[in-house]
Image 1 (spheres, one colour):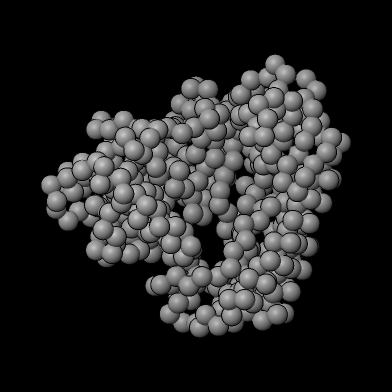
Image 2 (image 1 turned 180 degrees about the horizontal axis):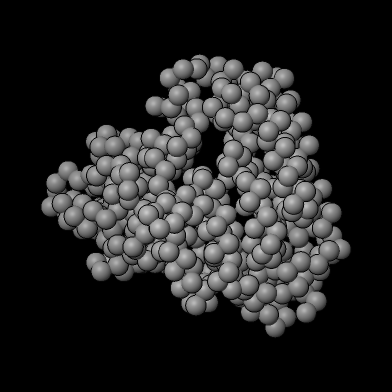
Length: 427
């Protein structure tokens, strides 16, 4: 989501600035931030202090902070971080030219107003750091779920969906420019809903419309909430081969007690029923997840329930974190952060070790299979190797030969690691 936001910001500022490859030469440095976890905020504070040295060499340099951290801590940051000149929350990007102008003459400069309407749907993002193959399209902003541990509803506001026509036009324009994959983005993407006097459109309808642009345009999406993953969407995914068979479906915990405390509004049983339906309709679909270790009051049995659910599902990949308190959330206000740090780390290490096993097992099952791979670039390990992803979002590496970035190629998998499929292009 931050990448998509940064591309909107680049568009808004394009009449005033050109993007530089060198921070030493820059007159404006923007840090787009996340507040979901404390370590992300601590990295930003460290980065701000590192950038302070550049101001001694360039008196015209302005440094701005964007996004969720700016929204969460607000103008307090301007006094705490001396290198910082201005801040803009995620709904305030249109005001950046004014904020920059004010900061340039020494005025206190910030805008963290949250909107119930802003979607930036009339702004064409600048794909300034793109491979020219894959692009992100933000289709909605905000979140209505209020999970107990999460700051997103407070830093990005309530859910609002973009006009579908602007989304479809953006996807069409990207395809005509040579892009071959789009990822539809939202904090809870499958709760997308557009209503007007003439018609309504839900996320499954929108996905189908974008899939119909061209069979050569792959469609992905992130992130899904288990309560909204509908049979209708799964059937659309099965109908169109260019809608990728990959779903990121955060579970957070395998314990009903923890899920209730987290305000996830589903049970372990419901989640597993949805997984069963995914595998019934899309037998080859890959599923990834998010897992939190050491949430407030988590018992050893709760932890074991998470491990057992992971084994039952057999995730291809997972984003795994230990719980960190986020000020202002329900968890911070209602529950004690009572799991010792060393126990959080131990449980997280067990989750990571299990996921490594599951990822390797999944990849081993793919050895001998052939996949259609969209080539995204040259491998970091060898300029004689190309890499891309299959429909299941798995990275595939194979010899270069005569193939070009942006091509589709059939790759037969010959071996694997826990994170990569390795093979040969067969035609």
